[in-house]
Structures are given as structure tokens and as C-alpha cells.
Image (tube, rainbow, N blue to C red; front, top):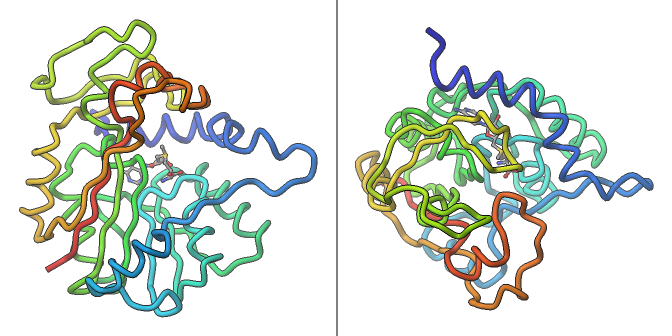
Length: 259
Ligand SMILES: C[S@@+](CC[C@H](N)C(=O)[O-])C[C@H]1O[C@@H](n2cnc3c(N)ncnc32)[C@H](O)[C@@H]1O
């Protein structure tokens, strides 16, 4: 029987062109596709550095589940010392390498599962993962791996769909299930992801406790965005709606330091 992660990998390979086309839609007239910085803004960077993160030019950076490479290329543009992206989808990596070549930055892309990261121990200062861990079957293994590849004092930052947001149907704003119903689910109405992708519903304490069990100290959490006015939200995120985002946060993020 195929494992859950390998089923998701096949779906990502199948879905990759369409998924990347969504992010690159505005680049038809010669503009470069967008990237983003996984590093914090200036104020937060001071705080992270007070908690042990090196100067940007000394940071060895790894992105776990790098997709089309936007964050890894963004880190390279920010001037980190090393920028490596890992993803299990060869099609997503093809887009990532193309993006790197378009920007002409120094970044490496490696095929691998975030539960068995194909890099050596104690090699990185900052690991970032955007919207990946909610699809990973063995979260304990994934966090242990993130801990293994980080140096002592290294930082892991990641976000996932907010577990409360995931309880609602974005169209009707009705509860679809209970917060306590954790486990495996096929994503049904999320147009940003393949409709058959397998996601794991976990509570906020599940995520927190798995980090602690893997040897991390949680230093920060965020729930983003927050405004109770739907007009503050553009309707660009097809997996949510302004009305839903005005009621519950879309994203839950963590920063944790490896002990
Ligand atoms: C929603 S995309 C996010 C990509 C990127 N982090 C971003 O923020 O743009 C999720 C990515 O995670 C990858 N992924 C999912 N599960 C994975 C796993 N177990 N190991 C490695 N990559 C995984 C998928 O192939 C996909 O590229």
C-alpha cells in the first residue's frame, strides 16, 4: 500500500504546474515571478538575533518543503550564507530551479521528504517551512529531523493553516467538524491545493507538544491575520474568504529554538 506521504507526493507532481501558474499569473508580460523573504522584518530580526540567530550573511538557511522555491530564492536574495530548499516533488523542484536561474542567485534544491531530510546533522542556523507540516503524516519524525539538521540554538519557523480556520466551510461559514476530530482528511474545497491532497488535522497543543518533545523551546507564536472587517481582506486566497478571515485567523505560526 502506498504511504500517505507518497500519495501526496504524486498529487503534488500532478498539480505543480497549475499551482505555480497561480502564483506566477501576473508575470506574463515579462516581469519576474514573485519571491518572498522567510527572514523576519528588521524589528523581529533584532529579537531573533538576541535569541542566537547569527548575522544574515552568516546564516545557513534551509527551507523544508520549498515548493517553487520562492522562499529559498528570497533568502538567497537577502544575502544568507547558504540557501537550500528541500521538497519531495520533482515537479515543484523543477519550478524552484527555474526560479533560481531567473534570479541568478546561489541556491541549491534537493529532493527529499521533510521526515527524512537528506542533509547532515547540525548544519543550519535557520529552518523555515511554509504550509507543509499539515500534510506530513509523521509530525514527530519531521520535527526530530528539523532539530537534527539545526545547530544547537538554531531556529525553526513555520506556519500551517490555522486549525480553527480549518473547521469551517469558507462559503457557508458553518462548522464542518469538531476541533477534537483530529486525524487524516482529504481536503475538499481548498482550491489552492489539489482537492485530493491528504491533510492531518491537529490541535494547537498537538503542534506545540510535538515541538517540545522533539527538543525545541517555543519562543513565539502568531495567528495571522487579524481584523474583524472583511473589507480589510482581498479575496485572493481561494482557500478562504474575507468573511471567514474576519472571524478566525487564516494562519498559525511558530518559532522554536533547538536546545
Ligand atoms: C503549499 S506548498 C508550500 C511551498 C512553499 N513552502 C511556499 O510557502 O510557497 C507545500 C509544499 O510542500 C511539499 N511537501 C508536502 N509534504 C512534504 C513532505 N513530506 N516532504 C517534502 N515536501 C513536502 C509539497 O511538494 C509542496 O511543494
